[in-house]
Every structure is written in structure tokens, then in C-alpha cells.
Image (cartoon, rainbow over all chains, first blue to last red; front, side, top):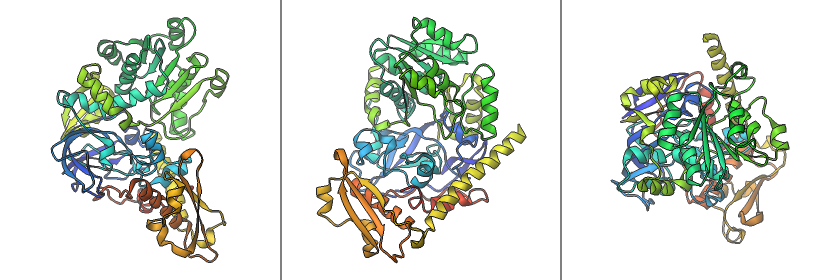
Amino acid sequence: MKALQWQGINKLKVGEVPEPELRNPGDIIVKVTRSVTCGSDLHLLGGYIPFMQKGDVIGHEFLGEVVQAGALVKNHRVGDRVVVSSFIGCGSCWYCSKELYSLCDNSNTNPALTETLWGQAPGGCFGYSHAMGGNQGSHAEYIRVPFADVGAFTVPQGVSDERALFASDSASTGWMGAELGGVQPGDVVAVWGAGAVGQMAARAAMLLGAERVVVIDRYDYRLDQTAKFIGAETLNYEEVNTEQELRERTGGRGPDVCIEAVGMEAHSAGPQFPYDQLKQQLRLQTDRSPAVREAIHVARKGGSVFVLGVYAGIVDKFPLGAMMNKGLTVRGAQMHGPRYIPMLLDRMAKGELVTEHLATHVMPLDEGPEAYRIFKEKEDNCVRAVLVP
Amino acid sequence: MRASRAILVAVTAAAAGVTATSVVKKRRASAQDHDGRPHVITVFRPYDELKAEQVPGSLAELGDTVEVSLRPAPADRGTEISVRPRDGSPVGAGDIRRALRETRSLLEAGDVLLPSGPPTTKTTLLNRPLQAATEHGREGGLL
């Protein structure tokens, strides 16, 4: 079958690989009908996550049709249209019992790597390096889905593929940021990043009752999309001073909840960007985190900061003093997909959550390398490129 | 840009190599490497259930070469299983880590997840240490 394979730093190609097999009785095989690029994939392409092997199939946000089911699968049958959580949970461990699915104890077949790096190993993820289990990714004609009764969800009739696709990761990640960030009715919420996850976090905050939601980015086309389709306020950090603007819009208090949806390759205004970039390239820090820094500095006293963007290791100039003295709650997580996907599909069916606009580019799988080039370079107003095998 | 990318490649490879080598070294740990400390894992199954049954899977296969003890975990988190190699045991730390992780998975999920397959990757000079580490992915770490 055809698949989009990582070949080395900034090298992708569409190659022929063996079709995936059922390996455990709880597996299903899904014929992928849509699979989408994600900003976190760019960290793999850029070599920032050094646990890739030549030939790995990438992609983790997808939807498709069940073509095979293992003997112990109860919830799915051949022919079902399913959307699948990008992180894999067994459904039975203590973490899954608390709906913290991305922390699953049993879904990462290579726990030693991340346990050594981070002290404990999170669960497995599709197409996201051997540190996350080495599971083959979704930019392919077929994919194996382990623990399918936990992570795959039948898409209701009336919800299109184009809309349901983003329940797989972007919408569930965004919702998690708003929910676990503690958004309450009447809150003012600031979101850094107007990509798909940032837009979904903003929409989630609004649906959870936030009074004002402000989304920050440097690309006007993304901010225009955010204003038009999400209904949030916007702020271009290259045109205004973010902190001053947020203070003004919050009566001097600062946002109640700050959600960072940018990640380890963040850009920023001013001299801190070249400083961070140089330190990252010299590996004096592994990640750049100006948006987290800014969020902690501008958040209201006693407020919260939720980190949705993907980070791998060590950051420099973390404002620990501001965090401590302002009494902030700082939290982060990979996405707990099964906790949110059924509710999101329900909201999608009701029209409360729209996502189709995020797919600015729909391309055949054969054009995967070009799709990532456009996505990475933000060419042609690209927000997300959807691959159709 | 080219120079910085070269640095990035080198450091990335080195980082992967160091972590992978450390994992492989731990895998090769023999009984002599044991410092006598137990390896402990928490299984989300009630203590009363587990104490009444034989531990399954690869932990059972270690047999009398190790000493296994159970105690209840706090706050209904299940059961803590502690494993210590007996004096002169040929079992290495990596074997015990793998056995504990596989046993936890069997007891909680009823199965031990296998990696994706067939493989789509190729062996290169750069990824050989990573491949060696992932072939024994449940044997390393801090457990």
C-alpha cells in the first residue's frame, strides 16, 4: 500500500509499504479516507524529536472505514465509519479509569525511552516516533488501531467526513485545554496560536461560557478565519503589544485562563526570538517557549495556564517567579481523546462545532510531501492540509 | 542554515544514541548489576483479588529466581507488586522490568500490546541504536 514516510530531517516521500496486520485481538484495521497534517508533525520533520527511523509512516489525525476487526472487538463492525483518537488508551489502567487516556500505562510498547527522559512514560500515539510506541501513522491507505473499543468512535449519520475528521485530535485537544484549564462562565480567555488547535480551544472556551475569548497569532489569514468561523476576538502580535492589549481588554486584571496552542517551535516578537532560536539550534535548550513565557506573565493573579503545544525537553528562561508569586496553576497534557470525542461528535451533529474551514487544502496522498511543504511554509493561506489516500 | 542543520542532525543523533545506548545497557544488565533494590509497579486491580491468584504471564515464568511480594496501594489505586532477584539469580533487571510491565498489562487490559507490523523502516547507521532499544522497549527505563 502507499504511505507517507519520514526519510530524514525535512525529507518525506510516498512509498510502498506492507499493509498493516491485526496484532492483538482488540485491534481493527481502518481504511483511511482522510488524514490531516498537524503542526506537531513539523517537530518530527525538523528533527526535534530524535526517535524517528527512516521509513516511519507519519500522521495521527484521521478518519476511515473499518475493514477488519479482531476477535475481541465489540463496538465496531466491518463497514463502520470511525474517527480515531490520536493517542491510544487501553481503557483499563488507573489513568484510563480517570479519563486521562494519553497517560495510559499499557499502550506504549517502548516505555523505556520516555520514562528515561521524563521520569514516567505517557501512552502511545499514532505516527509520532518510537518514543510514543512506534505505531504506524495514518498518512497511508490502511492503519492498525489497537484497543479499538476505547479509541475508535462511529461517526453519526449527518456528520460529514470533513467535519468529523477534526474530532480525532484538533477539536479534542482544544476542548481539553479549555476544560482542564478551568474555563468558567464569565471568564476572559486568551489563546496563543490561531491554527486548528487554537481555534478549537477558543470555540470550546466559548461553549463553556467564557465571556470574552482573544486569539493571538501573527498571520492575518488565520486570525480572519478565527473571527469569521469561531467568533473570537483576535490580536496580531506583530502589530500590537500582546501584554498591553490583553491588560487593556481585561481591565488590567489579565486573562483568567491562558491556553498555549503553539509548541516548541514558537515564533515571537522582539529579540527573544533569535535568542531562543540560537539556543535551540545549539541544543542549549531543546524547545522554544515564548508563548508560555508570555502567558505566565500576563495571566491574572490566581489564574491558570494550560500548555497544549507539544514540548519535548528543556526550555530556557521559564518565569518560575511569576508563576509562584502570582499563584498560578500551570498544567499541560497530550490529548485525552476518548474523554471528548463522543461529546464533540454530538456537538458537531448539532452544528455547535464546525471544522470544515480548517481544511484549506485537500490533496491526494501522493502529494503528501508537497502538502507538508505548503503547510510548513504557510503558503497559500494554509491552515491544514488534508490527505486523501 | 546548512551549518546549523548539520549541528542539529549531529546533536539529534547523539541524543538518540545516548538514550538508546542507556536503554540497551540497562537491558544487558545481569544479575551482578542488581543493587538489591526491588523493582516495583502498581497494578490497577484490588489487592484482595490479586493475593488470591497466581500472578500471570512473564512474571510467573521467572519462577523461583525472584521474590515477589504484594501490598495494597493507597487510595484504591490497586496493588503494588515488588520483585527482587534472589541471591545468585540469573535474571537481569531488564527481564524483571519487562515481566512487570507485561504482567500489569495482562492483569489490567487482558492482553499485552504488540508493536505495529510488518515494519516499514530500514536500518541505517543513524537509527541502529534506536532500533536496538525499541526491540527491547519494555526492558529499560527507571522501573
